Amino acid sequence: MATLLTDVNSVLGIEIGSVQTRAVLFDVVEETYQFLASGSASTTCGEPIFDAMPGVIAAIRDLQEITGRFFLDLNNKLIIPSHGGVEGADRLLITLSWGADLDVVTFGLLNELSLETANRLARTLPLNVVDSFGINDRRSTQAQMDALLAAKPRILIFAGGSDRGATRTVGRTANKIAASLHLFNAEERPIVLFCGNRGMARRVKEILENETSYASTNNIRPEIENEDLAQASFDLNQMVIDEKMNSINGLERIAAFSNEKPQLTGIGFQRVIRFLGKQYDPLRKVLGIDLGSAHVTAAFANHNESQQITLPIGTGYGLENALQQTRFADLEKWLPEALSESQVMDYLWQKTLFPNSLPVSETDLQIELALARHLLCMTMRELELNAGLVSRSFEPVLVGGSILTHAATPWQMLTALLDGIQPLGITPLVIDKHGILSLLGAAAKTNPLLPVQVLESTAFINLATVVSIGSKAKSGTVVLKARLQTAAGKVRELNIKQGELASLPLAFGETAVLMLKPETKVNIADIEIGKEPIKVRGGVCGLVFDTRGRPLTLPKEQVHRLAMLDRWSKPSNQ
Image 1 (cartoon, rainbow, N blue to C red):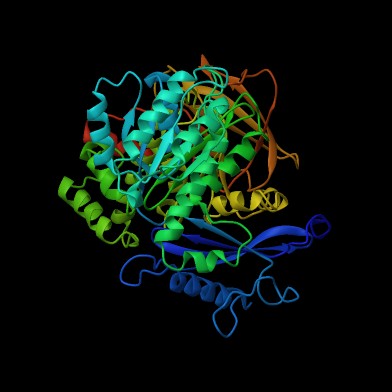
Image 2: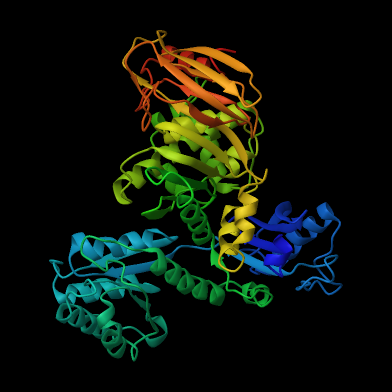
């Protein structure tokens, strides 16, 4: 029983986003934690109000209207803890993604080892790496000092040395940092996070603590061949939160009602993916992507590793950065109708001015879905280049973001994910329709039961289980015969052709056994075809077969491309 395992029943989560502030309620229903409802309002951290509290109060009032339950007293103060389960909530959680990225600089020893890892650590959070300094930096000492002064960072990340490695070089680098910090005005000196050789932590502290605020964390490269960012990322998150607490009016007043400091949204997201990575096939990975307004957060994990990146691109406030890296051709190839460059780019640049706007026509929606595909492509490329992702074999894939959930149909969401992520093997695709993954991660530390039970609930949409099939057969050729038998004994069969998207009905939550018989040479990642029956689970779009190939290629001729996209706009066998 949940009520016997914890004295906390109701949990109120507040997410202060770049565009929206959301109030989310979790509570125990029939001895199990459930997501009950969410309210939202415009975030008020920025102009013209410059105070987080009005947006939070408005979001909570919206939640009150939806649930009929009061969380605010007559003075607009939060009711924490609850009054007999009728008013208020037992616990408050806060996640935060609002605000400009903080500028950081990184210091390390060798560029290809500790410095590269320090930069990866910075990329786990919404931070802007202004400059990096290593022992093989070709700039003179004076030029490096000048560059550090010009960067004006708020945080300095200092890595270097394995736990039984370099000591003298770490000490010399610490002395160089101290000399440089002395040139700053006292109030402008960056805070330092040391994440290098743990045997040098005390010595580095002695050198730096008289110059600035200092903290140390686990070594991010404890051995030359091993990298561990998890604890350092969490401690860096605390530093960033402290900076934001000092700069965002009202945040400290809200946080006073919580037993824990607020967390950056990405840290909660990373925790959930890391937890799920230990529950599934150890040979594959769990992938999570959040298409946010200001940032795209992506993480993957299995039993042995976890990695996360935060990209300064998004669907609203981060759209300008995304467009600066985007050619019209990157979007045009995904558009199912012929649109001019000016029509598409004007719409998207307009959205940078009004990031909260929603598509009002089918054309607007198709432009946004093309953008979603492109952002997913960019994210996957970054994961491969900078986070060590070597295979696109995932179980499952979880994706969130209003660009997908607010207006698109389930099949439109499905095809956008397949086109952008291009997974291999057999992949369950799940949508975080309520945007609660980061709050579940924030809850996990003190209430691990809550995320476990909510993740198993209907709060998430299982879009489909997708079977990605590789073959060199001619388009339209039957490459595989599928036989699906449900738990109730119902049998469905399908001839699967090359170059198409096809589906068999399999209801949300329903399980079945899939048998595959190849008609030509085909491959499915991590599967021996025809050897054993494959257990699959259904979704809103059923069981989907993707024989379009990897990587996905589209015809250059517009007329052929549009015809192909039209074929994929619905299952080929329906």
